[in-house]
Length: 343
Image (cartoon, rainbow, N blue to C red; front, top):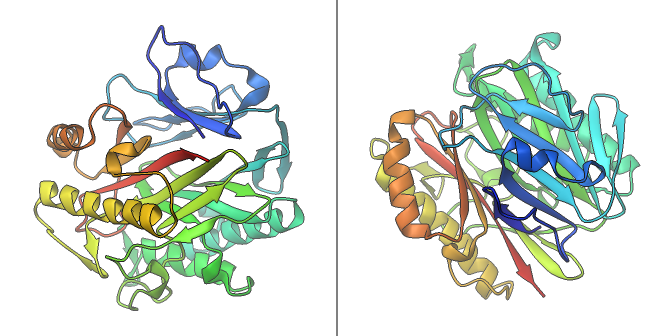
């Protein structure tokens, strides 16, 4: 997956030897792409928007703090076909399966039930297809820090997700990299990448694996890997989960956004080091990452985060900034990232 941060008049991007590519692009650039190869286009909006005319596109209600406002577009090397299986809309070719599921939470008794239904649907679906391995998954739903009957909504989401995974043998060994962010829309949205062959889980030596967290964070532990490596014939993809200022299992630096940023980058750097030294991948440090998505709880923190991150990352990493709520109320930001390594 190659990555580009496109501004006119840069030529349109191409996946090259990778099965697909991702870019942050503006509307006129997306319109010029080959529609048969567009996997999806993800728009970030401050308010609920009508469904996009493009059937492959969808909206997530997360205000963009970057200027200008970019959408995230995914494009495949080879043509794709579309389909729908229950609640899941998908695009696929011989190499990848991209799926999305957008649910109305009010149609369920609880967020736990909604989450269980969504994950059960995804797991049942991929097991019926030729792409049985989840590599990366994203989750967006409103009021992530809200609570009902003393159970936080993020905890309810985790319980539902865990319940769905109970039907998978030794599921902790197969968990994908993931992001879960509180959005401002009404919908419960999941999108994911599944492949024919499994990726390789990567854990962070500075953190307890999320699926081993103590019960104080959730009656059922969060079910995701800290990162995933996916080896393709010519390249390897490195998907880093949503990462925050957590060491061991504790939230650190609750009141200081810049120190939280530094701790978050230390965690990402630990994953990079693990991939370099343990998995023998050609990445030297975090400035070799290709793509970052930064979620910021309070928009007034945007400028200082952007300035500090720009100094740390340099100009080679494509970054967008979105306002969103983080899974723990004391966390002020979260960062997910991606890199590609040639063989």
